[in-house]
Length: 93
Image 1 (cartoon, helix red, strand yellow):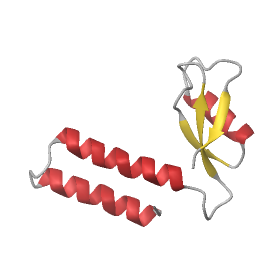
Image 2: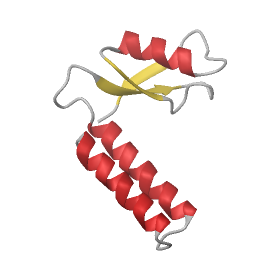
Image 3: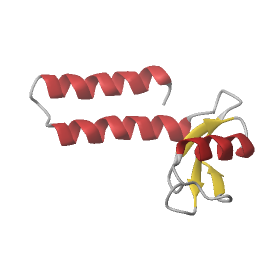
Image 4: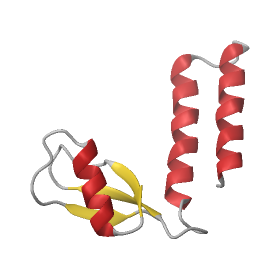
């Protein structure tokens, strides 16, 4: 999914919410699904990719975009409170 498609999906979810066709939980699910799809397909046309942290609770599931595993590890460490000294980083997609 490209950025424009992701934005359109989010706009459609918000429009449904605003018009009373969807509740907040459904809207959140639709927005999250669009973001997750965008993240997992990110990087097809760029030198960057999405990476996810694995291991300790502080980093497990934290997703960032970076140009390498090393950069991803640094970004995850910056975003995760109490990140351990070492943890695994996996590319998504």
